[in-house]
Image 1 (cartoon, helix red, strand yellow):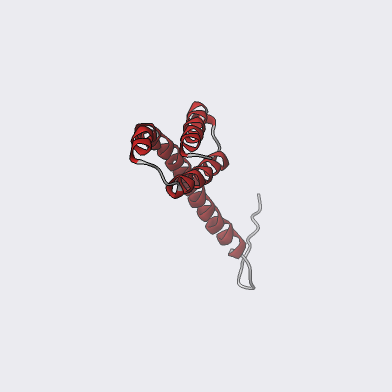
Image 2 (cartoon, rainbow, N blue to C red; image 1 turned 60 degrees about the vertical axis):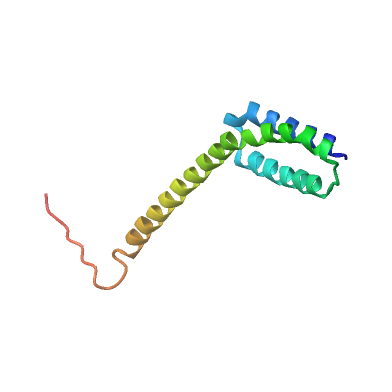
Length: 114
């Protein structure tokens, strides 16, 4: 692929992701980042003349402007994961406390007459 095709692919991927960003799964975002990394690596290996580089520069800037929106969605997933991890830690502590309560010979039970 030449630089023009790679930038077009990058624009297409970004537009597609932005269209469904609210419903995009974590896996979809991860795939996007991976594929975008490959394209950027390929672009960096292509030798371009200054005129070609200047022609593509504004298009690449437009793609980069979308990063803030995409990054915010990724941060939402990170925050959600942190909340879930915290819930699991609390749950593990609670379950552990119940499992350890009453295990052993020094537990005492009282029956009450009604």
